[in-house]
Image (tube, rainbow, N blue to C red; front, top):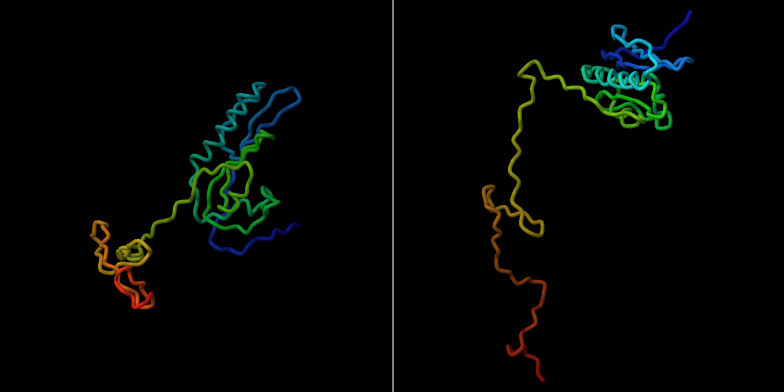
Amino acid sequence: MTTATSEPSTGRTPGRAWTVRLTGYADRSASVSCTTPGCRMPPRSKDIAALRAFAAEHAAVHAKVARVRPEATCHCRARKCTAHPQTQMPCAGAVVLIVRHDPVVGQVWSVEEVCATCAALTPNASFRARAARPAPTDPAARPAKTVPAPAPARVPGGFSSPGAGAGSDGDTVRRPRRASSGRTRQPRRGQGGGHGR
């Protein structure tokens, strides 16, 4: 008897994955398989280049027609993040769809629903789609649009100008300088400063 551990039910569905595999044989022929049972594959052939191109295109079609489900959990997490074992992080972010293909191996293409964190950490993965946010069904539940208040106009130096209206054309009004009370002004030559020679 085998037992399986499961996470508590959160109303979320497991992330999906599609795997397209190119399998070679001793007679130098190959075949393409897909984990989706209804997919039609070409017959076994010795034209490896054509089969590899078919496998890549087949994975791309799965990525194109799949609709990313916002209620899905991270498929990478279900596999204990084996796609990026050296950089394990907690799953976080929106659900996205990636296509993963290692060009060095060149035999397996994976299309997966994963979280944004795992997508960024997975090597040889390309982003394809993001889950659409569900629109609220009740119009009263929609948040009211807020109109931001106009920001006060700014003048050079970073000080706000409370008297400037929002419709001003941006011209700066220069005001005469006031003498500061903390400074002593030096008298100009010829104005008599009370200093004797």
